[in-house]
Image (cartoon, rainbow, N blue to C red; front, side, top):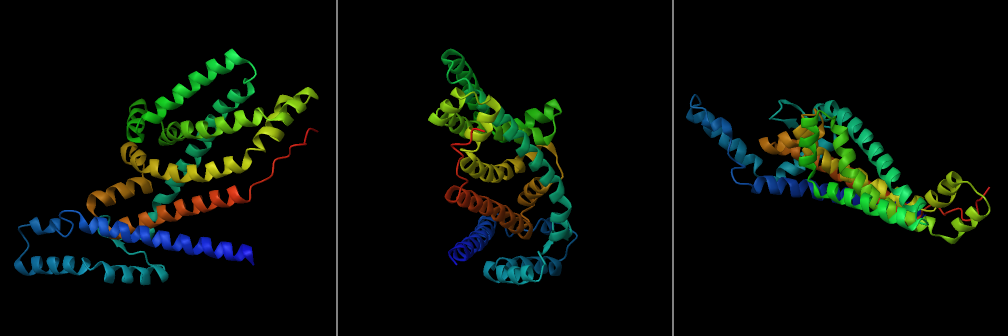
Amino acid sequence: MPAMKAFAAHLLRMVALVLASGIACAILVRSAPGALVDERELDRRLGEDSLAALRAQKAKEAKLGTVFVRYLHGLILGDLGYSESNHEPIAALIAERAPETLRELAIGLAGAWLLGLGLAIPSGRWRQSRYIFLAYDATSTIAAGFLLSLPAALVAYLCLVAGAPASVVLMLVLAPKVFQFARNLIVQGYGASHVAMARARGVGEARILWAHVLRAAAPQLLAVAAVSASMAIGAAIPNEAICDVPGLGRLAWQAALARDLPLLVNLTMLVGLVTVAAMAVAETVSKHGVAPAVGATA
């Protein structure tokens, strides 16, 4: 029963936050200057009747409460609405663009974690060699800080000029953040007393890393992995817009430029759903993490 109550609480919170993100997006778009101006009104071929019909349609769409209730009703029926800027149903647009974004996120996250952990592990492994540790730690920290200071859009532009794929951008954006979190956890893990005892008993370094260091830090690392997924989605929008990747990020960018409210609301709620789900996973893992196997030396 407590588990069911916790699950229900998470589910209700997710629904509330996702709906709140959709409402906030609609209010911000409607409040923008010129939001109710239709570009078709500039067409001199339109008569007064056509202009009046366009303005009446815009005035009807300005009633956010009515529009949002209609949208929720369609959402229950599986209808996400219609994109005026793309002249296509929104559900078809998302289904068409989602695989490219998912592939980009999967490669980018996997590469970022391999790179971040690969740079963090030597910081803990060499902590007993003072000068090597200080030199490596200073170099890696400065490099990570430099990458963190670069905006994601600038990294995307530099990778575009260099001809690198879009997934490389996510690796370079996320790897320094993964390194910062993982480095502290791994250094702390290597400094534990049971690691010194295992090394004194002749346990191999690979076994120490896997059974004593990474396993002890697993709950925190899993929580960071869940959070990094939401960070990757945020970085994917400027990345796909600059690198011209036909994914959901570029679709969101185009929808913002065209002020396509139905499409923007759907994409905002989708991003909100993934972000809230990632945070729920991180919170659950932090509370019910895997206990480290302190005595596992075999």
